[in-house]
Length: 236
Image (cartoon, rainbow, N blue to C red):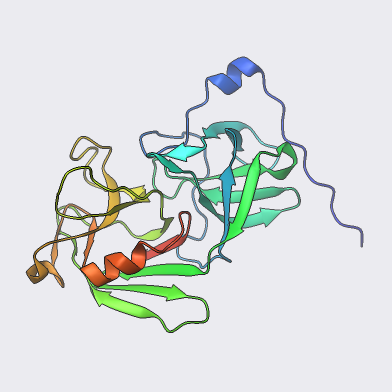
């Protein structure tokens, strides 16, 4: 049986394209489909737009957003969670959480890579595990969101890597493509959840944060090696 012909991206006027929201941690993308399988694994394929690309609601469907080349000062890398002929479905960092979108391979402007890393946070066990293909998994006890500000569940991804200019609670902050379910804003940001260190080891194993996952120094060092766009799965 011959392969199916790729669905052609729907054309849109420059005015309509210019009016689309950027798919960032600060924005809402109405009309974008939610992740249909938010706890599934993925193959490790990640994609980087070398120029701003259009994101669609479905292959050949309506344009819903623009995926920029950078996120929070880091190059944009997002994980591919589904593929069809000529199209790839990716996780987006926007609200609502678990937002996805389709990008057309035929439009160009994309760079692909494969991440061998997987990160898994088990909330009830207060455990973070980093797995690298072909190596033994490493795990640490971590702190998670308090009952009033829980850490959101589902599959997300490593969005950016931030090094604070001034000394703070963590030498490295790793924002994820997900947000607090109870806070619209926090610390001047849009409630983005992150992985980061913490100076007091007494908090590990407890529900104490505003939704972020606080990790010990050894875990933070391991996470610093994880490529942007790598899948991070958070389960209850």
